[in-house]
Length: 333
Image 1 (cartoon, rainbow, N blue to C red):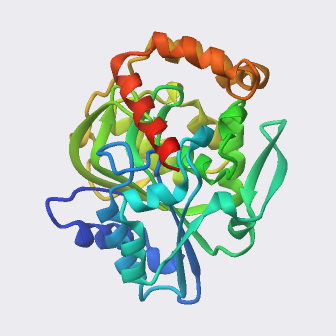
Image 2 (spheres, rainbow, N blue to C red):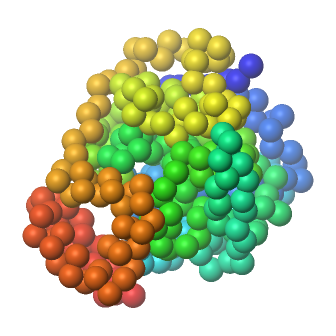
């Protein structure tokens, strides 16, 4: 039986992390000679509440892992569409200092050797690119996402966080059949622990902007599908809107039936109703999200500059603000 933990933090972050890890049986999962990889969600170059993983959560987890295993690696890829380097996100989340204090290593997955892996998921072949370090050296993969909605995939939790392991900054060209691709990545990397940072959740849009909501929650599980099902349910997002979770369940990775999961508390008392509000750009983006040819024409072709000029005119004020911030990082690099 899978296990899941859910609790208010109430100023006791490290204690609650340890309590949750013990509830899901981390000492049976992580051995003394293991190499542990932690994948946070740094989908923006600086820390933003509800958008990126809180550095304090990572710091507390690293302190707990320090004497538990042989080696700990924290890693992330460059931002999508050449928006920023992983090193910028590391600096914006104080990861250099945090990892130095705990003895953890810090790696940019986009700079490491990688390979393509192809396999059949639900009777259809899909292919993904992954860093070789994750394929050959890691004993325990920990997904450390944020509790947030996502305008295209319903939610961005443990499974969606794995997409950041795709090292190509232009991974936005490969969103087609994303549910199967995420499922393949989950099968290959086998995240043994998923910890969802719910100190602040994100409502309204996602993944890079929206309204941060103070939830003061930690969610974790020994199964990524269980963790995602619990996170989506806490936010009141129907799983039919997060189809990638259902694909992973159908492939046998885990269960979305929380009645079959050992949970430490009554999760229903933490439930809130989150909403996903699509802009005009979001609705137009559905086409390239499902078509490689259209995505290529828009994002990586001689027409790209013209398309982006048109898109700029259609953006909301919040979309313009985020785009301008990301553009400033491009110029800084």
